[in-house]
Image 1: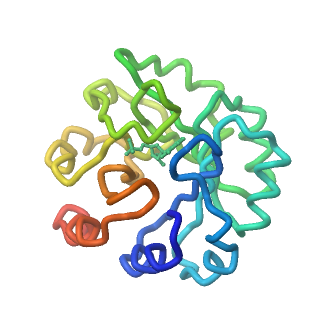
Image 2: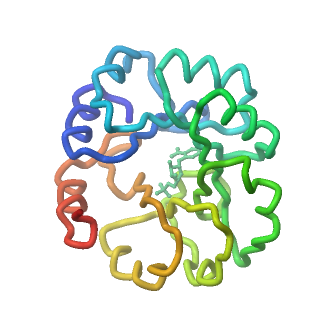
Length: 202
Ligand SMILES: O=C(O)c1ccccc1N[C@@H]1O[C@H](COP(=O)(O)O)[C@@H](O)[C@H]1O
């Protein structure tokens, strides 16, 4: 999210979370024009998530204070120790795991108890925002207790395949580039269609 008016329009749809990217190399990098005051006006029901790539503890905590973030989404090589420290500071920790041809569940074991959620995204040249989906079938035998976000090029048609994951602790869908008119500028009619989809209605 990069523009105040667009942010307001998205928030009117009442998502559970809204993400703000604090990685300078992203075309969605948080601009100074989006002031902390604009985020402070969001309804309390929406959790504000800071998205980071290999930032240090102090930088993350400083951003969390500045923008009153409730959650952080870590997309780099952040280890369990940092995740634990951020949780102890009261932040919800979402650890992104980028999946390629194989899914090695045992590699997630060190993060058990250190994170609130995993976020499964597509492995690519970039750290995130690839707009590409991975093979969800790799998750069908997921057996860890930690719930997860599903991510990676999600679009409206993706909902058709969701029933294959119905037995899993799927916490939320994370949509990004497929619902934009430009990086960081969300496509409001497309999001309205998503939010009124029968599968996502309460
Ligand atoms: O969107 C970005 O620019 C980005 C940059 C660095 C790390 C994460 C980023 N976005 C996250 O990537 C996933 C998948 O996005 P997409 O649907 O494939 O475009 C999502 O969690 C974004 O928050």
